[in-house]
Image 1 (cartoon, rainbow, N blue to C red):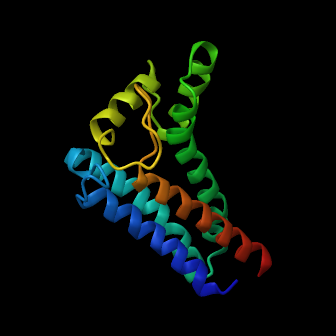
Image 2: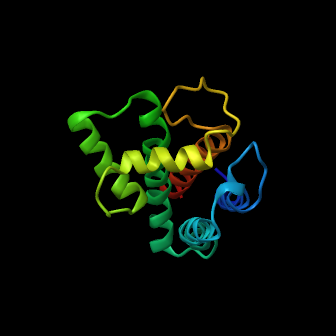
Length: 168
């Protein structure tokens, strides 16, 4: 695995995320529905976290390289938690409590209450009318095309990063 491939994957993921958060490509994305505060938080937090691995790999900073190996898999887990679990099942009862805990960790929202209901409301406001290739389901979160591409690229980046790190 060439070193340049790792950097290209990492930087492409960062650029894709930042552009699709900032630039309105409706109906591909829901950027037009974000408040300025939401865009700043999304770009700021994720921009910093996504910039650390290419810095680490670019300058051979082993701590940041290790961070990148772990981070991309954690990011993928968060993306799957946010998009696929509520698409496949509506969390009820004890599962709802478990899902709310996962959402709290995934979104760093420890405000309590029904996080699933808040995420569903945010999804409906931001993404419900964007392009999806999956069947829409009433009152469900449906992974849109923008986030499907993000998830695929996150998986590719996670695998390429880990493969390069452990093979060097």
